[in-house]
Length: 228
Image (cartoon, rainbow, N blue to C red; front, side, top):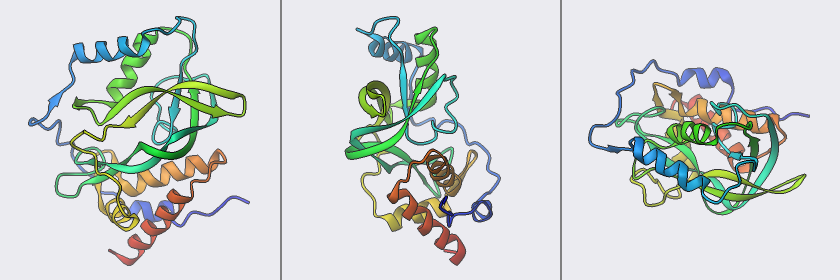
């Protein structure tokens, strides 16, 4: 029987606030056309033109990949775990009330989805992905090829892992601190509670139960109900 989430859409709605996009932080250095072109070339180096390209989705890429894909498989990345370790002062947070977003951090294992990109212009596909995931220098994520395990056997996929040297790396945080941030932060893309709800609901719909995220959604729901 499907599990019933404590973090309901009604509770998520309580966290929503209409926010204006403050725009890019002028104090930060942003990736330019040359940077994106170099990233794409580095990722394609040594790959056969007809080799399928898979993408590992562990967070918002599951429900909002923004690129076409032709197939999805439940997959596990070993040596990496899903963690709310990226601080946000835009999108789903503000400088006054920072939010948190998921990243792949070292250690453990993470179950998510492998998405197979359609055959076509690899450079165009990767360029679109990199512009979605990386905007500032140094970037918050590093793209890398990683080995995944699936019911069909191993496959190699593109994944975005957290840059521990980036200025927005939050490091490992206690669950209470993560829940407090997700229950309070909101930006022009929505709230932290909305982000967490989408991740958990979409994982569960595919038969992926992340016990840590399940505990976090219970903690966030309790904070919203208590008005903390």
